[in-house]
Amino acid sequence: MPERARPQFVTANPTTIGGRQALRVTLTDEASKGEPNVDFIDMPTFLMIPGDFKNGIISVNLFSKLRDDAPAYARGFAGLAYRISDSRDVFEAVYLRPLNGLKTKPEPPRHKRAVQYFAYPDWRYERLRQEYPDGRFEAGANIGPAEWVNLTLEINETQLKVFVDGDECISLDKTKVEVTRGNIGLFVDIGTEAFFSELCITQH
Image (cartoon, rainbow, N blue to C red; front, side, top):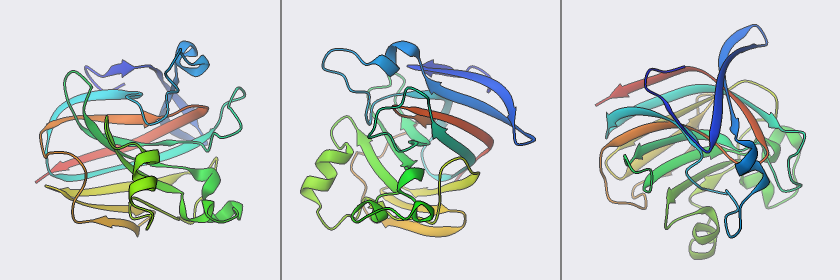
């Protein structure tokens, strides 16, 4: 467990999977069941790692699969949050949807929805899809569930590049919130059991 890490609607426990040491992160039972008017999609559900990150590279290996109680729309959502405010009410994030990965042969348009950027609280995926139908904030990727994948973010002010297993998937010149400094998070969403390993943070 990273020093001073703070769970936000998640539980986190060290474990071993596939011979690899990892941190298992999943929603709490309360969050998994939902709350009135809260669906826990694109919400502050992460293990927050204190820091002062603004620009640089964040890389992690992750393995995600569905929980037994996952709803039908779950896709194994797991990824990285960054520039998280101390109050956890503003942040940016990139997560994977492995069940939309090309290895699962998804039907269109899901084949272009395996990687997602969003900015909390105002720019969750629904609004991004509605206002940017060109799909610039999400992308396809050659991934599938229950396998190790490397997710790397290159962040420079409002510019963001996202790499999955070394392949560039998303390149944005302007992300959706004011540039600030903040914490890092291991992000999971509804119906997901995720494992994180070899987190590396390089600040520029």
